[in-house]
Every structure is written in structure tokens, then in C-alpha cells.
Length: 226
Image 1 (cartoon, helix red, strand yellow):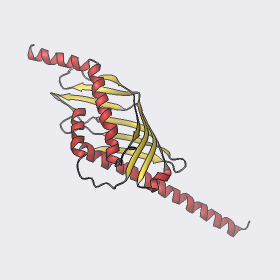
Image 2: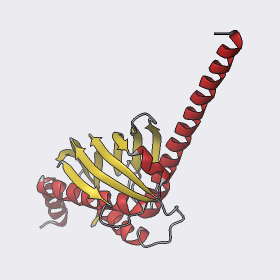
Image 3: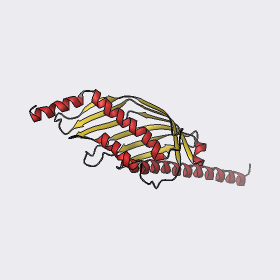
Image 4: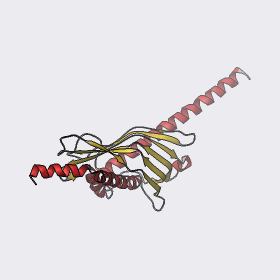
């Protein structure tokens, strides 16, 4: 093989590698922006993602450092923190109007159940979704299907302004959802809502079942002299 041929082959390989890197970077950036924009609009609070990595070889990847900020008038601690979620994407669907995510596995999410007076942050976020889900979105009309979602080994930090002993941790029940967006034409925002509504509801129920909130109620009665 001549030197000129080797140079041509080396040049082609370099172009291919650079093209793959460029496409991957653009895809990762687009997914990150979609999560942040759709989530923030839906929840009426900041949603941030540190990094998204999706491989063009097989479609596997991860979402790293996803945070849902607390609503206004609550603490600066995130209402939901996901250190890392593994994902599998149908790469062929990326060229269509309906993106298909085959699987999302979320291990060890941290949820803050924060009570201020008669208001709970997770309940407030759910109420925000009632408003955010009905607003006019500037996002594209890309549809989103999530075939399988599993959330496991999570924890809830229960905090109240009335509890001077500090916060308490309880376990979050595992959760599995199949076929998000399969029966309709879910936008990204609508599919995210189908995840967050039951997640917040489960967290509220787990916090209530733990008995921690009963202890807080007892403190209220003591303060009122009842």
C-alpha cells in the first residue's frame, strides 16, 4: 500500500471519528437542553442536568446530576436529586418525530419532603404541574415514548420547620412504569409529567406512613398547648 493511499485512509478515518464526536456532542447537548427546558416549564422551577452521555454504538448512556430545585419560599436543597440514571435509546427513532427510550433505570434518587406550616414542597410542585402542563410550550413537537422506567433504592429526607431535632430519612418505595406515551402522542413535557406525578405522590405517602409527620404533628400540639 502506497504512502498516498495510507494518507487518504488516515484522512477518512479522522473525518469519520470527528463526525461521530460532533454528532454525539450535539445529541447529548440536545437531550440535556430538552430535559431542562421541558422540566423547568412543567414544574415552574429550575431543572438542571450536569451532563448527558449517549453512545452512538448501541444507544446506551446516562443522565448525570439531574436536580429539581425546590419551589419558591422553600429551602435551597433540591426537591429531587438523581446522581445518575442509565438509559437506552432507540437510535433509529432519533431521526423521526417520536423518540423512543427503551429503558431508564434510576438508582438511589434523593427526594426532599419539606413542610413549612401547612404547605409541603412536593405538593406545591404537583400543583405547579397543573399550571405548567397547560401552558404554551416553545419546545418542538417531538414526541417521547419511554417503554420501561424503574426507580429503586431511593430515600426521602423529611424536614419540617417545626422539627427542631433536624431531618429524618425514610426509604422510598421502588417504582416501575411501562409504556409511557405508547397510548397517545406525548410531548417530552407530558412524558416527564407521567413520571413525576406518581413519584411525588409515592414520596408523600411513604413520608406519611413512616410516622415522622405524626411526630411533627405532636410538636405542633405541644406548641399550641393541646
